[in-house]
Image (cartoon, rainbow, N blue to C red; front, side, top):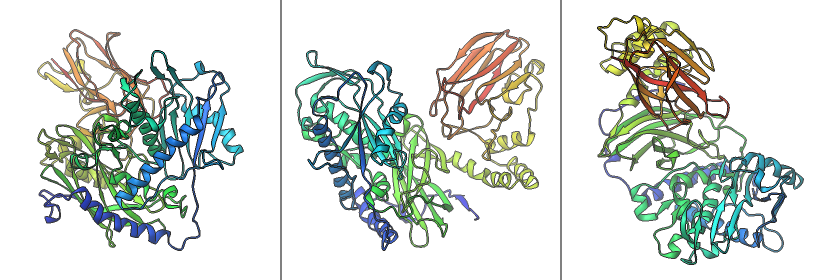
Length: 606
């Protein structure tokens, strides 16, 4: 299927001339999306009531906190009402999660007594705890890998005399439309009946001096937020226009503002249209499991991306495979570097009958590097990315201090896509022809990258042998003394993927050293250089954790902390008189899976 991708130089047509309000966008898009979803579901014999399953897990030396069934029933019922109200406000009707209630109208809770005491467990033990819960769930006929499960962990510590609360519990979640798990903490104070109370005050080990009402905003809101992740919702924050009208996005910082309006402390939490669009096809919300196991198959063609006034305008066409569930919506996430996606603003679109669509992205962060991610949503609940971080349609951009977008990086990526297509097809003649063409580009960065890719290997001698007249050199262009990497083979100015470009945290770099952990590169300096400077980070769309170390003549002269996606430390070290340089990348202490470390544009100077 041929893809045509174009960068437009000017603002697109009048369809983007004025930004619509949130209410206008909802009124236009939601009926269109509902029509596609209802047509998919209509006449299907696959109606099913998917339930949310609740587990209460407690260490062997603890009994469940007082009135846990009553309290957690109130917690989950207010969350159920929140989703129903938000989905109804968005125009989808009162779709929400289904709670499994016993005959006494309280939650059916599966109690699990852990095999070990409290001191044995820590916040990172979520999967260990779920494994301990699995036999109890299986005995009840529940497969936790195929259902949505909330595990309340009895891992809080409340001192009523000092009015001090601490917790040592897993508190995270993940999942998709087929199933997911959310880990929460229970405490004697967790109860939505306190949401409207400004007193008494207490001290929380993480959040400081707060009222019992704010405590429940944070922790009842936290349950609601993490349940969203278990349902497949990624982080996203509200745009300024949404904040003024609606409050704080649940999947942003709305886990801390849930119900604060009851105390008169500001607007509460709300569900963005992007989150609502995702929920609208979730089998628990739709009551249908039609095609739930199918993987959506569609691609975006004729994609055009241009900048408007503090906006990014996108048009294109979604082409869906005949055997795929239909596409009912597209989402755009504008995600600044760092922030764990909490600060990603969103925009939405519904494709027309012919598959064409247009998206207007506004409200992205000024003065920052960012990623533009396009997500395709399918009527069975599937998406091109369940969590929102690995869309195949991810493009780096930046915004200046006034919020005006710079799309040069996207233009560069698009210019290399025919080359990458030739790599995929293993067409060596076409690869060479395209690189020759790109090496003469008017864009200096494009030309520089293409020339380095044409070179295949470093073009200069070892640093010690470079003439004194050259005062600066890209280290990746010089000959290495020795090199080893943890995956594939040492590469310079490219990485071992079809993309090949040196890309990290939404930036394209002209040169760099591929260094999948554990990696070690040694260079001969001959005492002839004074400074080494650059950055380091992980390759785009990788989730590893690594530590970077620089040694000179065997002595460590710089090291990073453990680095993950979204972190890109700089280094600027003195190598005056040093004869041997070593660049080392270690795994982050959790194995070397996905540890695609890269030394980014390291430069020697004198």
